[in-house]
Length: 355
Length: 260
Ligand SMILES: Nc1ncnc2c1ncn2[C@@H]1O[C@H](COP(=O)(O)OP(=O)(O)OP(=O)(O)O)[C@@H](O)[C@H]1O
Ligand SMILES: [Mg+2]
Image 1 (cartoon, chains in turn blue, red):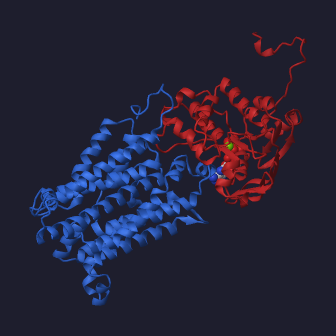
Image 2 (tube, each protein chain N blue to C red; image 1 turned 180 degrees about the horizontal axis):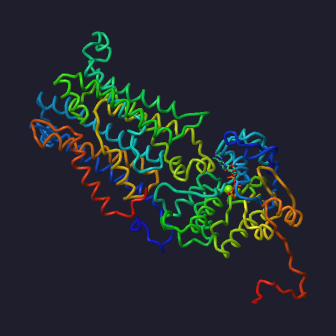
Image 3 (cartoon, each protein chain N blue to C red; image 1 turned 120 degrees about the vertical axis):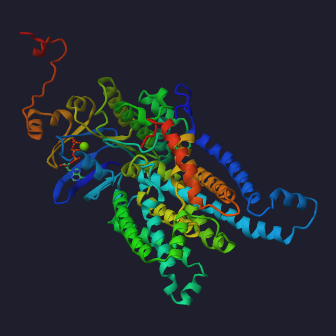
């Protein structure tokens, strides 16, 4: 960290530096987005299409479909999911005052997983009209309900006399996770082979099912939740001093906690519902950014959104090209690339990684 | 325009930590709260700062704090906790600026550096807070608190410094420096309430002293009125002798220096 600011110099302004990073990261996101439109199983490239457009030639039917109906919604979903996961991670870490917290702590992951498994294994027993009601998207729908429901339950359990205990929430989250895991285990036991395959792939996450319908159903909630979370910068900074001190400097701590928890449940719940379980983004991205530009949440949250979106898009590009025309689950890519990078940073920074 | 706590009662579960305490602090004065460990000093400060549920009433500049919003309170009083831990590796200057964002000096970016200079840590601005020593950290927190109520009087109303053991981990020079900061704040028209363990500093710097013992106020008054053999011995449960140096010109010999 000391490289950031010279100890003898006039007072540094880490916030200004972190805000300058917004532009750099936005540029990175733009480049990643172009790469994502350029690359794919079908040999249709963005550059060739742009050249055609410039020369006034019409795009072929196939080019249209690939670009507008396959790659563009996939890109949009990648941006939404990546931003949602990374911002949720940063917000949770600020709320729990712990750099290891991730959205899973508020029970979203466990609940969403259980919801998805229920839908995959028992969905066939549901009357047809229920499945029609969800627009044939029973699994995402159930995952979202499961994630949201478990967060609300946790929030209820840990709120007494209008005050939410973050520590209780953590412990109750572990209990709830164990319970959801056990129920999932029972369902796995009775699942048939095809369902087991579906389950495994759901758990590894993928953007392969991206469609405009999914983008439009998850998008508004993610945008709203991420937007709300971005407003929490000042309050989360105060919370770094502890709940009592945060209140002393004028922050409505309880209101902030409620907003943070609901925003994280909304953003992560929707993201997990449309993309399955994608790990690592929520922990690695905020941590990298704190190392690069300090912990000020007023810049950290937006930077997390930008970097999270960028990394997820890049991971998706890799997932698409490595074994093309088949695809890797994106969760494998984020873990295989994210884990070594994370370990390397931890080793290099040993002693400086403050908890 | 005072800070008045009336009949404050606080229970932690079945145990009563405060059993009906009254305290009036006037602006322009340093009011000290002393008493043995566990007598309820921090708890009383907690009630006055609205950080824990209590029965009774606290009025700040004539308004009931129960009816005031967090940001409203933050503009009128700043609180130094007994101990603080910071969660992320913020720079010292960032920590001090946290006091700025809630106070009313928000449009005066030079205030944090002035506050750091006031506690003698101007050259620490770019250090990481978590790497500071205990005493340095305590002084940085004081700078943050000073930032929040930088002007002791605003809109004709006094502002308040509420300090829980502000000198507990400081060396003697910085104890004097910090107490002088508190006294100057009061002399400029602000109000100060400080929880103290050092009775000599209390006698030196405070205008009023409240002695707490077992959740009750044993005595309240000026230091000469309150710091007596009888009151202190009762409060602390051990025989204490208060002495005053003789008037100038009279030689006196302390037996401490004698060698057998
Ligand atoms: N959170 C709590 N839960 C239960 N009991 C508490 C709690 N905080 C304080 N107490 C009890 O209330 C009493 C008063 O505590 P308080 O912290 O006010 O003491 P104090 O006068 O500030 O002591 P010290 O000089 O050690 O700081 C003590 O008996 C303490 O054990
Ligand atoms: Mg105390």
